[in-house]
Amino acid sequence: MPDATAVLDHYDIILRPDPSRTVVRPFQLDYPDRFRVAGHSRAQAIVDRVLALDDAALAAELAQIVNSLDERHRDVDAMLRRRYDDVAAALPAPIDADDRQRRLIGAYFSAEFSYEAAALFNPSAVLAPDQSRAPTGGVRFVLSLRGIGEGHVSSVAFRTGTWLPGENLSIDPPSLVAVPPIIEGTSVDSGAVVHLHCGGAHDISETVLFPMLPSQRQGIEDVRLVLFTDDDGSTMYHATYTAFNGADARPELLSGKDFHSFQMRALTGDAAGAKGMALFPRRVNGQFVMLGRQDSESIWLHRSDDILHWAGGGKVVFPRYPWEFIQMGNCGSPIEVDEGWLVFTHGVGTVRNYCVGACLLDKDDPSKLLARTPVPILQPSPDERDGYVPNVVYSCGALALGRDILLPYGVADNFTGFASTTVDRLLAVME
Image (cartoon, rainbow, N blue to C red):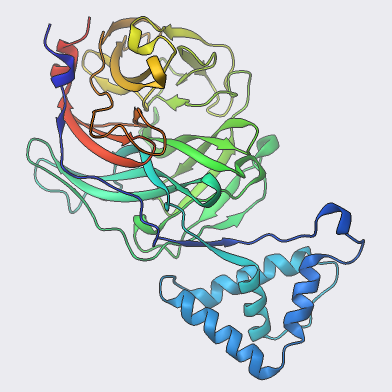
C-alpha cells in the first residue's frame, strides 16, 4: 500500500491571527447582584452622567471616540445610533437626548473586540457565489475560520481566495474593516429565526459573526460550510456550528445566499445535542442526511425530512486503529465522488493527538462504510505541533474541483495551513 502520509501536497501559505482586526460589539454593564436596587440600573446611571456633560465636554468626548473608530470601522455614526436605540429600549423611561448625546451613549455601551487576537483556525471551504474572476480551470472559494479573542471567545471570520489545482493557491488580503451584523430577533429557541444582516460589508472578509445570543455566549465554534443543492435545483449555503454558552454546547444552523445576510436556527431532536454535525450537500433518497458524533466516540449517520429536526440515527464509523482509539469525528461535510461519499475524518489517539484521515461511504446508502485510511494522511509535524492546543491538526471542510481536493486545516488551535490531493490518491491508501 502507498504511504498515506505522502498523500497530501502542502502549500506555503499560512493564515495567522491578527490582533489588529477588530469588530465593535455590545458592551453589557450591570451592578453585582447585591448592589442592584429596583428602578436604578447601572445603565441608567451611565446615561445620566452623559446627559449631564456640558457642551464642550460632550463635543470633545464624541470627537475623540468617533475619530478613533473611523480609522478601522465603517458607518460609525449609524452604528452608534443603533447601539443607543438598543440601550434606550431596555430602560424603563424615555431618554431626552439629542443626536450627539445619543451617539456618545451608544459609544459607552460598545467595545472593540479583537476577534482573532489569539487564534485563527479550523477552516472550511466552499465555492464562492461569484465565479466571474475565477481563472480558467480554477475556482474562487470562500473560507470560514474560527477566530479566538479576548476571554477565549470564538467568532466566525471569512476569507476569499483562488485555487487552480496543480498550480496555484492564493488567499485575498482581508479588508481593513470588519462589519458587525445587524440582528433581528433575540432567540433561536422554540423554532424562532434570528436574521443577521451585514449589508455594510463590501467584501466577504468584512463579515464577522461574534456571539450574539445566550446560547452562544462563549462562542460560535467550528463552522462546517456546505453548498447545498436541493432536489429542485435551488442552492443555499448552510453551515452547522457549535454554540457554546460556557457550560453547554449545542448545534445550530447558519443559512444564507451571499455571506452578507444569514439566518440562525436551532437544531432540535435527540440527536441535536452533539458537537461536530455536518450536513450532506444534497438529499439522499429524498431525505436530508447529517453526520455527527452523538456518543463522543464514533461517527454517526442521521436522516431527516426536516433540516432542523434530527432524531435517532446510528453509528457508521467506529474507532479501529490506534490513532483513533479515543474518538473519531468528521472533518466537514461529505464530498460526492463517483465512487461514493468521501469523508475526511479526525481521530484522537495517545496524548490527545488529533490526526486527519478519510473514509468512503456508499453513495445510495451512506450508512455503509466501504473503505477507510488505516493510518493518518495528516498529523502534527515536529515543527507544527506547538500552539494554543498542541498536537492537533483539524479541518472543518474540504473543497473539491473534479477529482482534485483542497484541504484547509487548523494547526494547534492557532493557525491555518493548506494542502491538496486527489480522489484517486486518497482511495489508493484506503482499505
